[in-house]
Length: 74
Image (cartoon, rainbow, N blue to C red; front, side, top):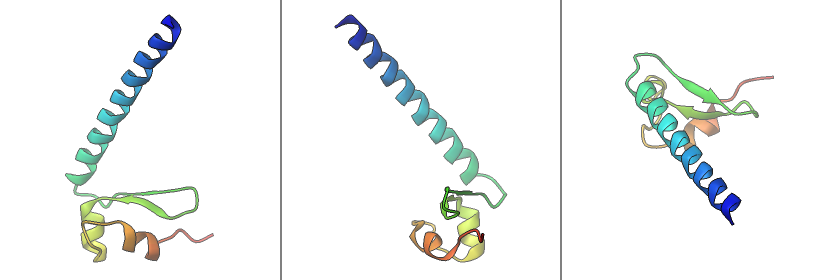
């Protein structure tokens, strides 16, 4: 039981750190004056900051249309 409880505490701490890291990344990229996007393993855009979406004419609220139209070529 003690090991399980310790593992649960470690997992909660790791999740908290991951959440903070994601929030920092999002804050930095959204306030950046650079076009920023992240591609997944399939070459599709998994994330794009607001400026990237704005310059390319995509909706700021959703990545859906970006995922459909932007992909790295092989």
